[in-house]
Image 1 (spheres, one colour):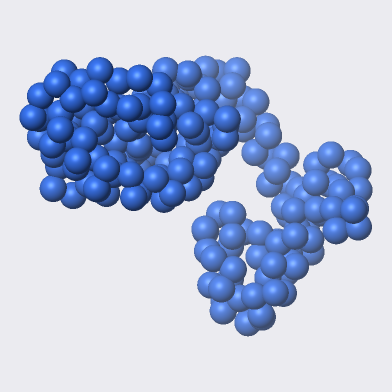
Image 2 (image 1 turned 90 degrees about the vertical axis):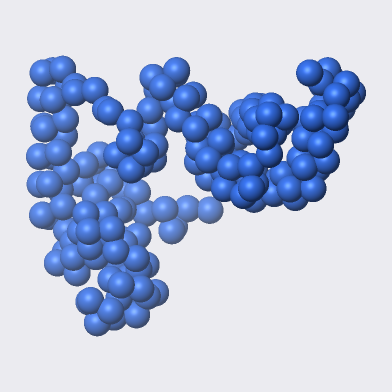
Length: 196
């Protein structure tokens, strides 16, 4: 097996002791390292703490390199990004702190989500009713844009087509709707466009 030291691109300088290690290192340099920029972007997009991205990158490289020593995958890109996705899932499971962005994708990732206790359920229902009441107080066009974006998941372009307005108008409706909701829910003026 190869000895790894802590240098050079988060992967380590590798001293090769066997032909498999040499082949794995050559495959890694040729197929994996060119994916680094896209992988870093993927990690920044999917992990909430940017300070942990270099550690994640290192752990991904270690897993990929160790797997390549046994057998190099044919599709390096798919393998690297699947490894990254699995590492993120492992970290989320281990931490038990689940940000809302990751919760949105839990179903698609096939992770079972634990049911909340009765207190949490009651609190969540009360918060949902409060939000629903706030949304009903929005001006009709703001409410329509907000519902299409947040509940139906439409893009601004799709919302613009459905509402018969331009994308910039939709952008304005969404911004105004969020500010109005914050005003309604938190009772203070939150017009962020006026701040510098």
